[in-house]
Length: 263
Image 1 (cartoon, rainbow, N blue to C red):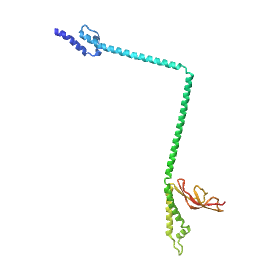
Image 2: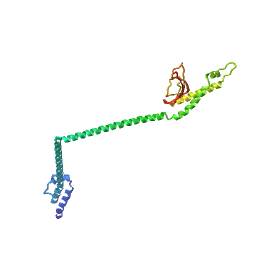
Image 3: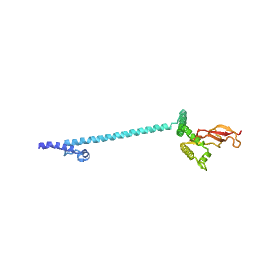
Image 4: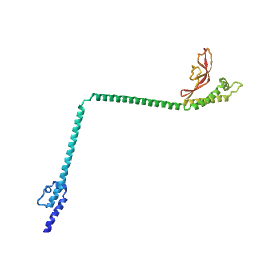
């Protein structure tokens, strides 16, 4: 009997420890000290409830204090802003603010002017660069063209050395005469070669021009001699000594011509 009476409190304590805190907090049998339980079990139940209630009371109290402090701070700030907004500015402060505004406005206008000038300079640079690139592309073969026009002139001189009458005579066969078909074939071959060469040069921007009958233009013509001719208009080209060439609209070589001078 003594052993059973001594073991009863220890069993009750172990059972109370196994019960969860939520159950201990909600169960009415554990919240109050029961006369049917042992003193150790009652003391354990009281100690398990005490920290939860104390912590919750402390948490709520700190939160309410922080809210009160925040509300007081906001009210003080609002009061200060209201006081500052309601106070009128003095004449000196207004003059200083007006001066600062004028200074900032002047600086803004100066920066705007600098920005517009920079944009204009950049656009001019872009246009100038594009023109230079186009000019370099168009006139990259200037040196090659100047050397090539001499070959075209030689073909033109070779064809001009054979008169039309000699070609007609060589092409016809009369009684007791034999035509010179080889000469005709040679002249035709030279003409075809010249035409193909001139067309190829024209594809690359190199053109040949003959100013015979045009008004004398000192930018495109070089007058080698002048002579009076009553049947022709004054200052007119009547003879082409050497044909001229243009490269993409620019005069590569001026034509050498004879000009009428009736004055």
